Image 1 (cartoon, one colour):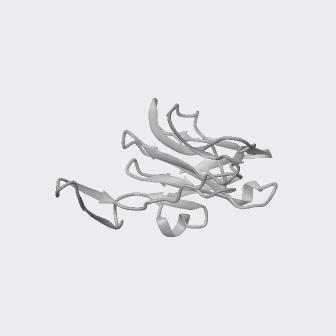
Image 2: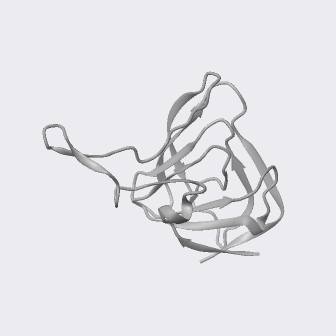
Length: 162
């Protein structure tokens, strides 16, 4: 099965999370007019039960092409946000489904290096898919008690088509 890769837009991604970008975002001057604040770009949800915000840097490596999607993961206790630090494009793959998503529910997006994503709690998504070596991301997610990672593997992989 092939999965078409489409450009990442707020409207196409709204069911899965927030697109973090300055284009079209609310903003205002701060710091005596020397900076512009782009305000409230994504919701950070760490849930209850002792959850706390983690700030991480991930350094990703590209996968061999064609890219096979063999699994997806989700985080039931909090959101997970990825913001590229080098303005390098990357791929975002999400899936619909309850306990066991199907490859036919996969949706794939090409994210520009100026766009971040924040996955809503419980949204199935593929781990980081970078297109260039040593791609760095600021990652904001949940730490604390409780199991915040579930994985689901497909019997047959899907292949990204772009």
